[in-house]
Image (cartoon, rainbow, N blue to C red; front, top):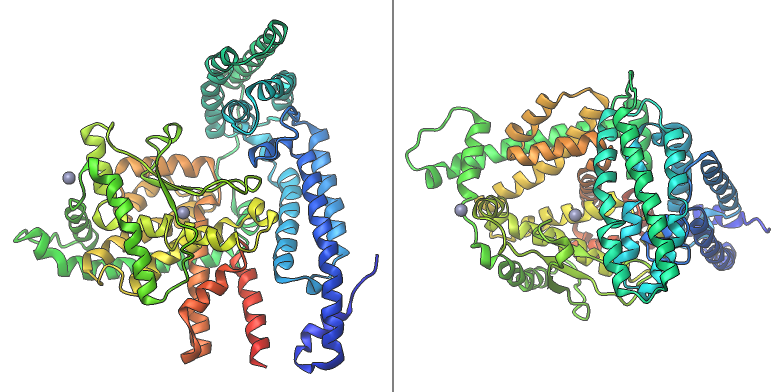
Length: 588
Ligand code: ZN
Ligand code: ZN
């Protein structure tokens, strides 16, 4: 293979022009087609190593395969990663287009992270909840990509390995954490219904032969037995020295590097979150103090800043809609947001790609007020939906508490975050430079960070008329992602107790007890995930402020937003680097 070194020099001497410039263009032209070929074969091979992941992304060629999670499988993962890391090295990063540069880095990160997970993190030893086949089988039953008979055939083939799957799981597990053990028991037993009720219903609708049906039922019975045995085995497991669910400083820092791919270290982000919390509390107190009389009349102030903020927040939360008007309220806000963005010239919103608002489908019912469903990478013609839940069937207390949470102000911030100009707008932009790599390995901190960034950006530009109430509620909302980061870091690396965590969430972030309890449960079975919102937001916001300072009068917010999103769902630090290179080139 030809190694291209010329462009490295040339990028550095970009201003020299002339012959080097031409050579650079040529080399770039050579490297990119070869990289495209590599990417395609990389993904095809990726699916052979991870057939379950393939199915979940809408690639159904290997639906009938269930990989047994034993040492052979882990060796295969590592071999695949090493081979592809070697191939990556044959490409000169500098010779690649921006789109391929970010793809290159995302592939590299994915592979290094896979090797690290097998060799260092080793959650295959201590997290029994990694072993659960139920949702993969449920997806085959619920899918619409192929006829029921074909899907049931794959289902039946895939079932054959279930007993071996759980046998390997038992062999892998060593000193598991109590939290993940409990989760594994609950989730596995909870999933059994897929092989009983759901499967029986599906078989009734199928045209399978008698023989096929009895084979399928036999395999399903064996699978159920294997799952129940696994849960039993976990319940009785002698576990004298269970591992702590806290990941520990070293593994945590590494996982943060791989999962978030931030320009900041996790310690820097933690310090930033602490400082931000303090700043938010000060701003909130100023607002609450100003709003006190309007909402609390002559009630004397409590004399404690945090309690004062809480009282005003609770009172403002009573400004909310009626349960049967919830959906309509969300729908009516979207055109208002679009008009505001147009008037203020904040970002181009493509009118040919309107957001389809739909009633939340039955299988999602009761989960959230509003969410975005985007088609998978293999479903190019699928619609993007804004799912809006109905509270019609909720009991009075549950609906009331929900409506207080998603009151008049927070509901608007939710629409900004989920739809416009948050997740939905970002998705429209990322689809303009299609990259299968970015659809598969999309950087969550960038995706969530963008949505969180737009909340503040909209308010800064006058959305909500700079009302004190709007800002106060926004700060409360923003405090949630800030405290998520503080919580995650403190629990996993600083031994934060449940009591301290509840104090942080309820007294300092003004959350309800149920929300705080749920968050504690989440932080004891996940790691790093809770940091992506605040980290991405901070990086984007800091980057924007840095550019503003550099460019002075020449800074244009609309151009910044459009340029930023044009790189797709890549890590913020990579987008930043590419944007700075391009700006410096155009200056010369
Ligand atoms: Zn009420
Ligand atoms: Zn989000």
